[in-house]
Length: 218
Image 1 (tube, one colour):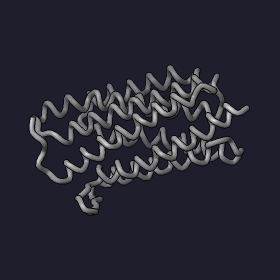
Image 2: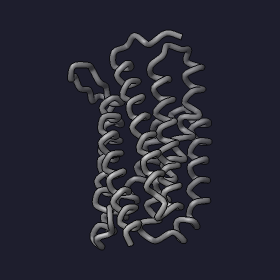
Image 3: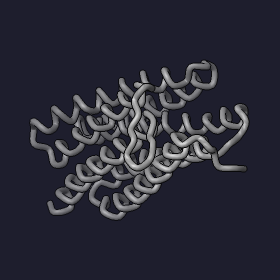
Image 4: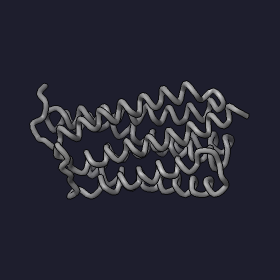
């Protein structure tokens, strides 16, 4: 298998790979400090592990020359990982807004919706539009929740809200397929989205860290 020759696909693959590493390290770090809230930690590390796996698959899909059929098959597990990751992000936000009991009640529904999103992408050819709608609905819900939690001065809620907002901005950039950037290398909308998403992940980790460590001190 050969590396792809398209410059923007090369930078997209590279940023996807870097994003995968950042998210994986973040998950491992959170696991190490999350003893005070083990269920919440499991939800968020699960979301991060799935996101890391999706980013790794994205790096392969964008970075290597392959047939259209091979590429399409690779996107199936990628969309499944993304769908479940976003579902867990919603569950994690419900935990912070309404508590652990509510989050546990909504977990089966959200994982079913995440799997259902994947099933629809298999049946419907325009997968990207489906993903954008699903992602936007979930992230706007989470953002509204963290704005409310920040007003109540919940630990880490402000950073979490910023992380979600940055992710929403990144999703908007990704949806605008005409967007591009040249900074040493050439980036298309996907590559720019990955760069923005890295910043969003950092803010999410900062928010989770603030809450987990604050709870540990109580």
